[in-house]
Length: 461
Image (cartoon, rainbow, N blue to C red; front, side, top):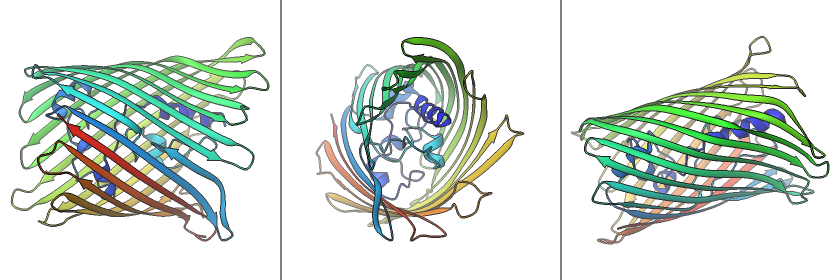
């Protein structure tokens, strides 16, 4: 269970603000490699996560508001089984079992499919200033036989960016808190993160831009058992750095690459019956490399996208109560997609492959390998006022390649629509996702069904 707390904590540490998959892409089957829209463009702000690129992210000022609701049910041949899960905003990680999905385990809120309930206000001036305020909230309720788990996460962030000719600078401050609590007040676990980030960008030419970013944060994690007055508290600091390169040839291609580094150090303190004891320390090193290419044909309305990401996380903790822990994980993510824009229909297809290797460095280097792949089909039909979208996703996951009978398969059906009246500064978007997951060997034994609905309003001024 303690290893789970660390897994959830370092997912939390990586939260980088309220970036999320826009509704248009969700409705098209999550074709995020070949659809550039909203928070998905290959630029310093969307792709590089560098706050110095805020001013150039869009041309106008804007107000965006989002709302998301979802429900997860489990069933087998005898009918519905527990637990039942409902959520607002992003579906937060489960408390009881570590997520085995590589995307959810190794990535952050920025990459989880879904959008928090909240809003973003961005104001740009003619003098080159850009100001942005983000506020979001996600919650999750897990109904078990004897009690209910409530999870919630408020997210807040302020960003300011200024453009000086070929240079741009940016600064942001953020606060996030993730809390898990049972309705009987028997236990509570929480994680908070206060962070400051800065960025510098240099536009060397209309075809090339380079960015540098860095940040410092104050993380805290705590676990409390109310009846025994027991508390396990972690506090410390974290710092990060990154380099981003964006290159483009107008009308032909866009390319982005980035390198990020994160280091976290925490001290553990046990508090029981009013007595405090320093009991250990935890450290985490995270290295991430990513690249993405989007090609557009001059002769044909064809787009092709490809991406490659590599991430390595190394966790170490020493404590006087349990054995030491030294584990590393390496994850690769490869994707390839193609779309073709016809006058009345734009179809697309995308393939993604994920591989993860986890190594226990204290147990003779014992490793566990897992993989997952998915194929996404999607498209949209633009009409006069409304645009209709649909998608279909099939996926298969093997959490341990050396173990038999643990594979699962899933399929997702997505629907979406966008409404924008001519010459009006606002648009409305909605999306719906129905996902079913079953074991490969015994599909009738259990089934997980998840339904999510999203809505958004965007106003430009």
